[in-house]
Length: 437
Image (cartoon, rainbow, N blue to C red; front, side, top):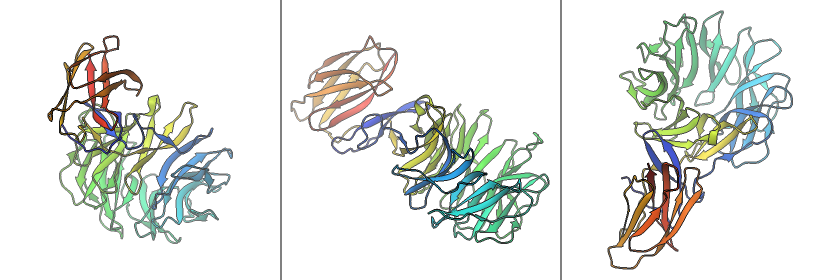
């Protein structure tokens, strides 16, 4: 059992985890903490990204222009602000490190996709590329001086960079394959990417890196599985990615950025995709079969942060302070909205800061009839109440209890997992799970 010390009045929520059930501690949010919608209109919103100061979220929105435009909204909620309003489609916005610009690519009047930037406070758009090729998925360097991106070159797609102020494009790769998803290293000296050939199923996608100043490409993976969407760890020592492995699913893996053996971070029967490191490097957030989950970057139990209540969730991103995760979610209207949720850690069971009180519920699992015992080792009388909730957070049972044995009858409830909270007038004494089978 892992333990946590709580403040008086702190509450908890349920989260599904593969192989176990966790209680997640979310101070001030009440039982079963809520996902928070940042957008809610009748348009679809995609690919949210936090500003470096954490105060804004930028994204693309298919709005009344009939096109995808770049928007921002306060991370605390409020009115949306359009940063573009042209007659073209605009995609994949990314903040500059200083927060003053947003870079993106646009399907413009030339019929090609070009790299553009716009002031994050609003203003004129600036085109950064101008040739007759398609340029997509831009990423800023850490010093803000360069943009790296994918560019198609008469078949194969290569990795290029261009000065963020505009200027000459420079090819970083020149192989015979298709190269995607470039990401700068934290020190700016390398670019990692995935390379393969979607026209040839015998060629698996692998993770490569190349010096950002140009030079030889280095393979970091080389087996007979697909490896996709690499992400640098904040300290630059690891690359995390999704790999289609022997489980027949995408799992999360990491490999040393200097080269070496791969390590599986997840291994169950669900797809794990689009991993993102937490700012401190201790956690990975990812798509988990329509849910948003996190796992320790060293591996271990997974914690669901957003189950979606029947609606799928996509493309999570950590806030700069690590306290929130933003993502997109399909709502009841069928539109994609921007949501955020706390990134708080899950625990299997929490035992409150009251070492004088022993609480036991048995048998557990049972057919629906339980016995609860409370014993105060100091010989004091302890009165309280037990409240039981289903997995939707609905209270289904409540009973006054004291330091003697008490019966709990849930035999009319369906089989499954339920959660209890024992409290008195001053504080929560214990939370946990019970199982009816």
